[in-house]
Amino acid sequence: MNKELKEMSFLDHLEELRWLLIRSAIAVFLFGIVAFLNIRYIFDHFLMVFKDPNFFTYRFLCNLSHKFGSEGLCIDKIDFTIQSLKMSEQFSAHLWLALTFGFILAFPYILYEIWKFIKPALYKTEQKYAFAFIIISSFLFFVGILFGYFIIAPLSINFLGNYSVSQDVERNFKLASYIAIIKTSVLSSGIIFELPILIYFLAKMGLVTPEFLKKYRKYAFVIVLILAAIITPPDILSQIIVTIPMMILYEVGIIISKIIVKKQNQALTKP
Image (cartoon, rainbow, N blue to C red; front, side):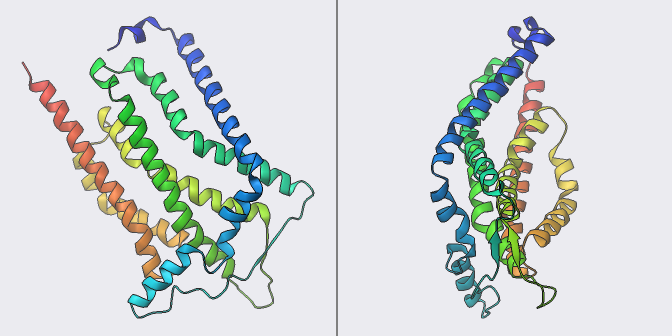
């Protein structure tokens, strides 16, 4: 264990944590300013595109559906209206969306700050993996962001935007509701794709083992299927598209835990 950790008091750790949060908030704020100044472009080219039947994902799913001899995933129109019903709603959406973009862009730096915070608790041999930790974690996060943006968000908006309980009910949605669907889909996917990293640290602490993950694999599969059924349209193909990467992440987590346990066992058996 690093001697630096022993020399730091509880208040010192709190002070380090405070500065971690401050520096991370500054990074989010700075990147958020960039997004704030370009918000019209972001709205027109990244958010409102989900209302367009020619969006990349819709065309891809339609072509995929054709290969299975079906038209089930083809979209002719997405018929709903987005409204701003409060005086401050558009400005609030502008502000919070900019901060969301700021958080996504600042994520690698936030990881760097987190690594600096936990570094004193690591052995010298573990500290050299800082660069790999930041690169791999950032990569998984951004892949998750892309998955949420190109898969979960359009599937959710297409389903909820076209869903109707009666022809007499008009589909007019608040701007905040529309943005919330996108933000939730994208950010939750980014966080879910960090599952292998989470399993890595849990395995290091001895809280999970390969046997544990294998034993509860079937329960994890059921949970993933339920999540896929909730966030996708009610068709098998869409649910499969969402389920496959989630289960792959779980299997990667099992492999990672095996490697960790193997290394720990080897370290214990060394004379």
